[in-house]
Length: 171
Ligand SMILES: [Zn+2]
Image 1 (spheres, rainbow, N blue to C red):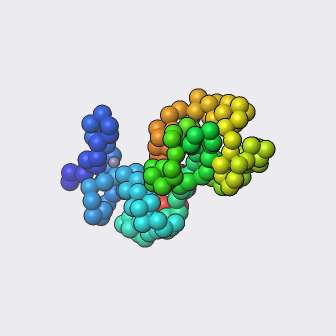
Image 2 (image 1 turned 180 degrees about the vertical axis):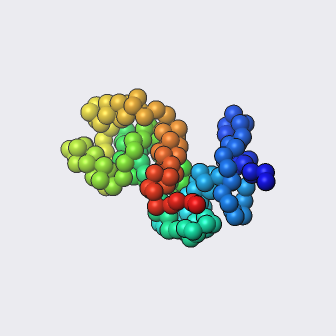
Image 3 (image 1 turned 30 degrees about the vertical axis):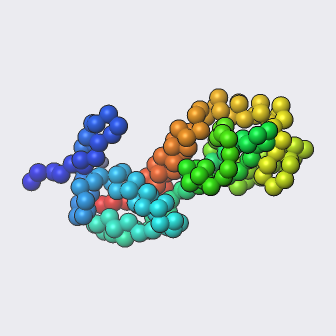
């Protein structure tokens, strides 16, 4: 019997070639099925889902980590410190001049940053672009890199977490 291999390709065009999950409706390996499931859930916006994996654990419940970042955007002399689980969409809905930096984290980190820079708060999530805040922003950018690329890494890492949870074992 011929073993089927995953036909997904990476950015360099190399085939994945991992074994296709038995009884899968698509020619994909476990990793690519989970990545696709993660992406589908992101699009659908639900927190848990079912992966029909075949074998004994068919229909195992899948919990997945939602990617999130704290972002810093600038408009005029002000900086907004916010958090999002979908950076590209959020950036379309916030009027701003520039996305300056992001760092991995969610509500807790956002609260900490708001507290840290409280003396510069103008209103809500907007802060005066003080020297101390701007130097934190440039340090953050140096540490995590160009914001959209940093976001992509965070999103990819969240998808990879699915594999580490051990909640899914495809037999
Ligand atoms: Zn694959």
